[in-house]
Image (cartoon, rainbow, N blue to C red; front, side, top):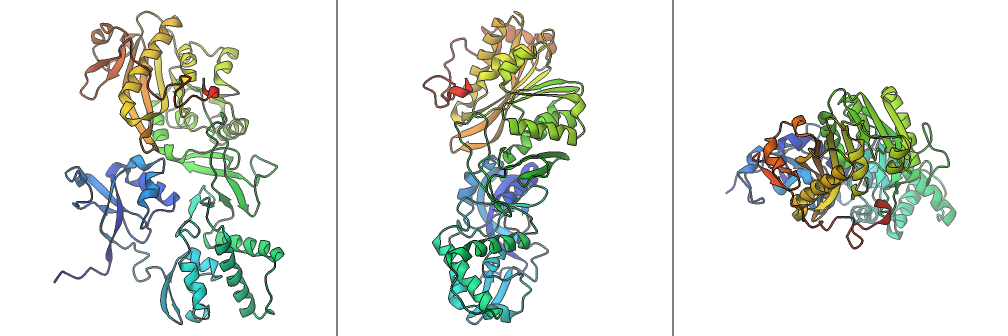
Amino acid sequence: MSDPQPRNQCEIQVAYVRKENAKIAKTQLEKAALLDKRFRMVPATSTEDVDNIEEQKGWIAVPILHGAENQIKQEPWDVLVEGFGHQMCPYSSKMIGSRGHVVETSSGSVDLTLIQMTILGLESSSLPSTAISALPNHLVEAVRKLNVNICPRQLELFGDDRTIILPPQAFEGQEFLSILQEARQFQTCKAGNKTHAIEHGDLTSVRKDFWRRLARAHNSSRIARKGAIDPDSSIRESGHRLVWPHVGIPDSTGPGSPSWIRVTEQGIKQSFDITRVMFSRGNVSEKIRFGKLVKEGDVVLDMYAGIGYYTLPALIHGRASFVYACEWNEHAANALEFNVMDNKVGDRTKIMVGDCRKLAKQHNLVNLADRVSLGLLPSSEGGWRTAIRALKNRCGGWLHVHGNVPVKEAEGWALWVCRELSNFAREEGKGDNFIILCSHMERVKSFAPTICHYVADIFVGPPEFQSLIDNQIILESATRAGILQSDSSFLPSPADIAPPSCALSPDGVLSQEWMR
């Protein structure tokens, strides 16, 4: 007979992450409402659910909701997850003795989530059992059986003010509306009001009342619904729309407007209009890394600045002496103007609105940068020549090239980028002795099942200004360009290397005209 399961822990589904990624992974899971908050993170135990058991010794098991694995694989931050499995995890301290909203009905005990209770019109789990048992059993069961896409177990809370972000299908459809109407009808009758059918005109008030109660249950003052970003849009506008108390896209924008939100990460305050500007939550680890790469005194050119994803870390954590920031979404540029002032770094920033390639010519952004950020996805290829021009002639500098790249082509992509940069450097008269050295490729997040967001850190400049590898090895290569490999050897870029499938060729997978 097997030993009984300890009462203070339970075998649950977990996501395995490396110890150094545990905090970030937990944060992302919580934002996506996929973290099982009933349990605590613990060191991973050996399991047959993953292949590399030996590596697993340094992993952390993060509790996730049942069935969350497929959704996690679609998230941009799934690169943080090494695998999935099941293991014993202890209950969190707040759950011991009270493991959920267990309530009594006339047919027995049921476990209701906070959201399910809100749908039923029950304000808290501390209500007396009579308040629950009075509910019709069929209504309670109907709520419990709602599809998880319609009635999520948890909701994403985003920003410093805990704005609720609804999934696209949440709380929609005739089945949900009928249940909501019946629950409202029951609560109205129970309060002593005369029984009446809820007409169409009343349905609007029923929904508003539900949003109000949902926000109050989550200690939030605003609800928005997640929307998609148009992949063919050059300005990458947000698809989010407000649901409550305001609806849609407000006429006004800027600080104090209904859709203005602030997100604080690593001590950096980032404010923007949630209905007009996208926010890259999956890039937090890359923002931190970039802030560490920037050296005190660096002059930085951020060619695709957004609201300051990399501009702000460069100024605040990297202590850059100055950042030239280009952004072609006017709403994002306005937010960036606010953010540099709000973070007290406005005196070290010049913000320019428009196409960075044209702005570089207008403002003579040449021979001035120690470091250039090319943070445009799915490809920053259209800005590489401009970035080469911006680097200092005497000592060169670093390019941080972002791109969505098929995983199997990652190395080939980096070699091809180095070859292209070498050609641009020669054409722009940067000096015959310039070398192109990719010292590192950072895998930021998964973009699709076989495609990842990568960042290539590439030195472009005279060999005497780099100390990563013997210069003679690079100078003897045909293109004086290539990759510094993990074993410190040099992999040269062939002069005739073929473009990868993600190159901006007319027939390539990333062939949008606006990106060229």
